[in-house]
Length: 329
Image 1 (spheres, one colour):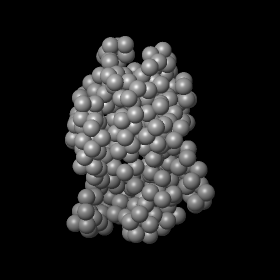
Image 2 (cartoon, helix red, strand yellow):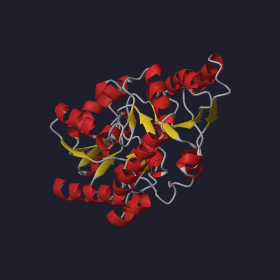
Image 3 (cartoon, one colour):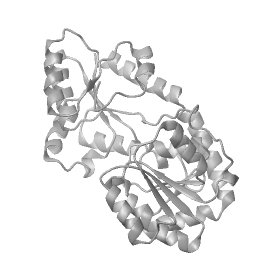
Image 4 (cartoon, helix red, strand yellow):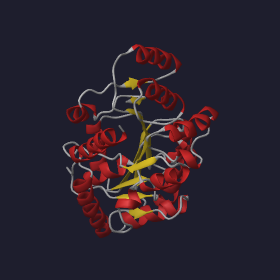
């Protein structure tokens, strides 16, 4: 398995698969060091899994699969084929890796359809959302949470953190006691901080820069009456489902698997267009309708518990790859 970091699901996957060799690639030096190690190793593999078919990881995985004569499975977690990939090296390696893959795993149906139209490679649809219900669970009644909106995630352009800040300027005009908490870090951290000051929203918007533990994140979900996802694209996003497990309803753009498993006004509130006014309208509607918030929270919680519980989802992933290993050989 080739990735940037070790998956938190590895211990459970090893119970189902047996030995898993993980190659963590964090730059050119680690690329060549691990490539030499792989070439000299006498290990045989049933599959080589590229957790991303781009540049370093994709290239390494392709070479490793050829050296070891093992089928290559590439995982698609983003909309790489429709404009997300901007680096030249990624645009060059992506089509080669995808077309040489024995199978491609897509984490939502939109991505699966896109890959199928691009290549004749076998595509399996397998969501990447798994929620630990021992950590993410309702601890505070929805009626006791006040009017806090939570945004948690990387502060990167496709997450649109500036959009949620601009929306708050409209929200506080309608709901003066509303507040927004932003948790995350990324290339847009400085811009977000400057925008909060520029729009005079320091009384209403708080930025907590950095990553927090899963336990802390669960606490934050439980303090919020609403979670906001305003991304342009997503594979999951897992945060919407973690929030749901804490009985926190979401307003979200129709990204990832959210519109595939949730329904507008039933299990989430869909933001019609990624504009500050539309995001604000969705937030204000939810803040002013506690009955709607509760209905959405209850329905989203039920779906998340039934479909995305940690062990069940990991088992689904493990079984899928065991089947791929059997059939691709």
